[in-house]
Length: 181
Image 1: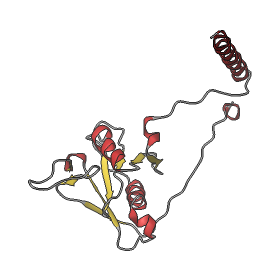
Image 2 (image 1 turned 45 degrees about the horizontal axis):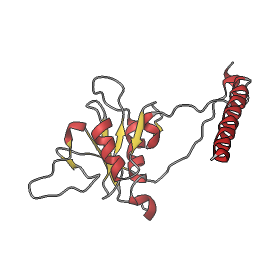
Image 3 (image 1 turned 90 degrees about the vertical axis):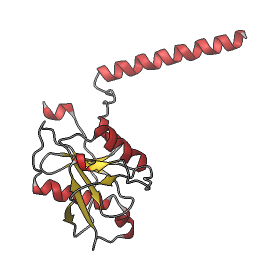
Image 4 (image 1 turned 60 degrees about the vertical axis):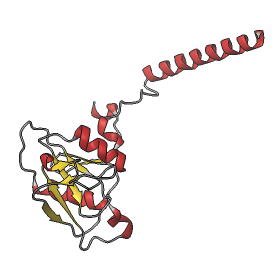
């Protein structure tokens, strides 16, 4: 019992010392604190060439979350015309709905197709994506139908976009405060 108490006290002392050491290093320019993640970093995402945020779900659960929580009335919803594809949201930061730039439409459509089963099968031919307004996306199925998790019903006109290739990139961004000063 006395030995356990001494062991716990020793661990607490070591933890305090290592924290103090870490604090000293971070203030001296060695190790800096971990930055806080943005809310969209738990999804697949990129910023289009027109500086618009595009987000896609990683699985059915994230597709549900994206549409139910993050799809706003001024945003745009993209989906590949393939069963089981990710839901893709193009965030419009303006309060009113405006038309998307053509480059962003093409990039979001290609992203939607790349985040579908077309990527695994390496076939882009005949695969297209479409975009709709948020009020056309519904979780309520027709009478007698069943929607699985991550599935949605699209009502109204779909605006199709054909994609010719499957192309995605991967980038890592480092920020150095010293480089900017």
